[in-house]
Length: 188
Image (cartoon, rainbow, N blue to C red; front, side, top):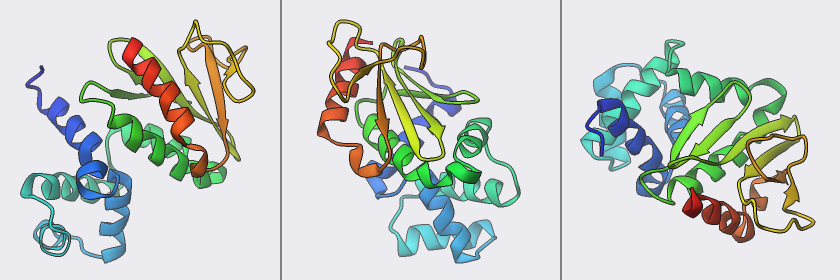
């Protein structure tokens, strides 16, 4: 287990939705909508009105203030760029996937790249990519699993995964898809 601050922060971000009901992106939007800008005011809102503990409130406050100032982390910037413009409507699919996948274990690593987010444990077990303005593709490493109508062979989509599932709505992040992702995670 690592003692690096950035690893602890990544774990907190992964656990946000499970513990507090919203992803980091959603908390940042809530803070932005409040119009508050000062650190203490935001902390009071998060702890007082939403019941967050000091550590989580402080994390969200720092991230929200950085976002408001045009900053944020490189990872946040990559994901924001992927789901910007015409693909902005796909962000709820990504957020639902990440919230669910992060619950697989503390060893889940989200590694944003320019065009997709790699899903890693000891090795890559999947990826999430907004491929078109109406579709997110989920790549999954299940090399010995037969393709189905929904779990198709990856073909030319991405050589780093064996299968692909196409999603057009958050409702398609269902038990079947999560079972395939969990299976790939357990093998990684």
